[in-house]
Amino acid sequence: MKWESRGGKPPALLHQAIPSLSVTEWALAAGYDGVVVDLQHGEVGLESACTMLRAAPRDSAYSYARVGSLDPAPILRLLDSGARGIIAPTIESGEQARMLVEATKYPGVGNRSLGPSRPALYKGESYTEAGNREVSTIAQIETVAGLKNAEEIVTTPGLDSIYIGPADLAVSFGLPGRGDWEDGPVREAIVHLAALAREHGVTLGIYSGSGAYAADLLDRELVDYVGLGIDLVFLSRAAQESIKTLRGTK
Image 1 (cartoon, helix red, strand yellow):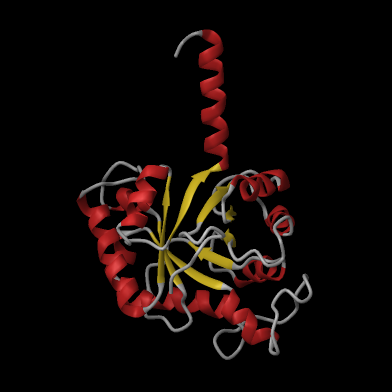
Image 2: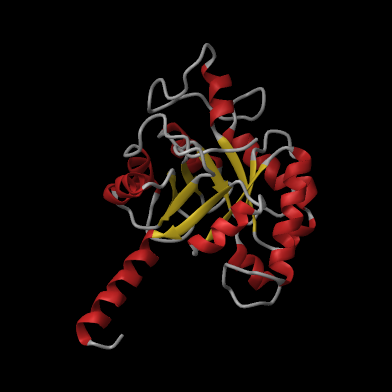
């Protein structure tokens, strides 16, 4: 399955670490296709995340949340508030992937409880079947252990996508914790996961801090979508650039 943005191109999502409705709205207005509300890193708590998800249009296909664990309780709250995808970090086994599916899909596929706080979030004759189609269950692979067990993760029934955490994966290999790798084991892992994803009919995404690097991966059809940048990092860089210009230290 190929995911497409509003412009017919692969989607780009902003990682949002600042608990702000304005940032969510700004990202969509700037041309991003959605956001990843990040409860794993940054300052976003569950209550703020649920409110932020409501800042996105009801039918926004890429209003995602990254959780800190496989605890089904916050996952349920986020989905009921409008999250169209749940990214779970550090998935390292098929059993963990199965637990993620259980938390994100309604019975028939998973074990999600029915009780939406945004009524008519999913359109169709069967609300639960529509919800299972429209919510993306995404396992983040970011360790050597996860990479080793990638095939059993990818083939988990009900799993929709794999998301690569390149910096943590690099650290797991004993490399510096940076994200955009042109060669070496992280790049080899990207190629390997791309092949597995194509073989088993799931999509593949990755985080990148560089538009040029992400565009190259998309052009090579190695990934289907990207998480492009973090709001907090963008703000930090802009502030540093402005003060350097003011002080004449560029």
